[in-house]
Length: 307
Ligand code: GH3
Ligand code: MG
Image: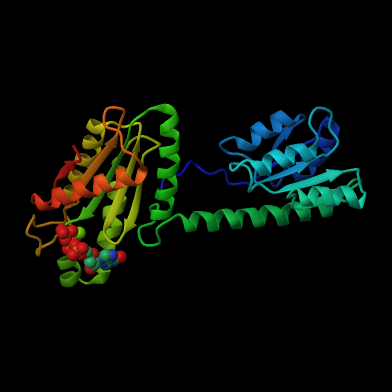
């Protein structure tokens, strides 16, 4: 699965309008965490949404332009930042304030003056919980056998790209790919060899597209699906042909195939564009599936597009 180079340490964002307070917390935590800081709400919200954003936010409550409650509310209202735990660190120590913070979805509450050991322990607990949740989330979107994205992830991304489209009027292409005569492969070489073949095919397919936005997923069984945002029919054909070629080049022996002495794939593609619009993401998928059926009927190891 493609991923950016991970930073090895978890990141903590400290939000406080007083630089001296930021400094006190940062000096407690900087050995164990990568530290980001913000003295204003807008900046905190911006950092929270950044590519390598925080795994935890330590937040003051009383701040002049936007208070900690409001920042927390906005973080929890935004899909992209909702999962980041927030710990309020504040001199307000009334039960009512604590209740308000927790009701807003804050993970914990630390009263000032604080004990350094307690701050470290609470931060560690929340960060560990967040990293575990992230891992579970990642596993739930990954195919266990091939380690590429799974159907659930694909369906999420397709829905996102589709909604982006209606605003931007761009094209979107989708490929459906199926291994040819995989049943006889399994029957003759065994299920273990079949699984190995699926892994090799998945990895080879994932290496073909070059754009960061492109997505390859296992759709189920021996079927794969490719999402190509901002790609027209010609671009889709190019990627599909590259994939067919990549699998031919793997040269995985398949003596029981009528198509070739090695494993091959067939691919069907469909494109939504202003000239040839599709009514829904489901229609796009169905059109690619119909094209795949044509590729199979026409002799396999080839690409067919929906128009
Ligand atoms: P076609 O060229 O028309 O696609 O023929 P096919 O034999 O590939 O298609 P069919 O749908 O008849 O068979 C698909 C086979 O894929 C059935 C099953 O043995 C195999 N298969 C599906 N999922 C897995 C899996 O997770 N592991 C293994 N080893 N085999 C699988
Ligand atoms: Mg098949």
